[in-house]
Length: 144
Image (cartoon, rainbow, N blue to C red; front, top):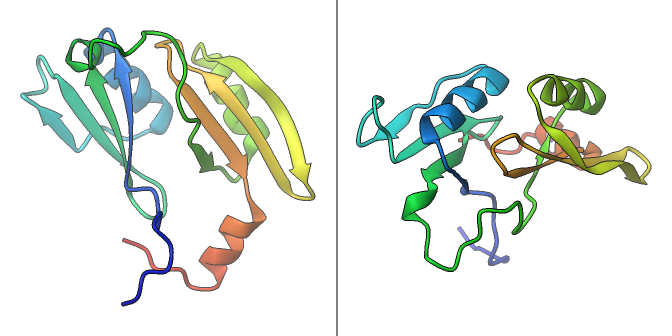
């Protein structure tokens, strides 16, 4: 297999949380799935990981005490956008769970709509409805 692009696909997205147990439970409520991986254990985890979406990408959440000293406890960094089929419904659900709008719903070009939300635990989540993503699936993009 020949690789022509250095960045092939999302492998993992990591976020941090002050209270990892609370963050794990909040994300599980929103996502509708439990984490598949927790270390050192479910009672007092330092790291949890969910598998999400068509390609089973990893969403990892780490206890902020394990972050490098220079890391800040404020929303920031790269905004990773996840495709959603119904952007308004997803935004509504996130707001019901206490998230706040970071970036308003914006149509970038016909059919490509983005938004980002700040979760109550301080992370930014990017959302996108992407016809390109849907076309890739329709054309038989490989799934993990």
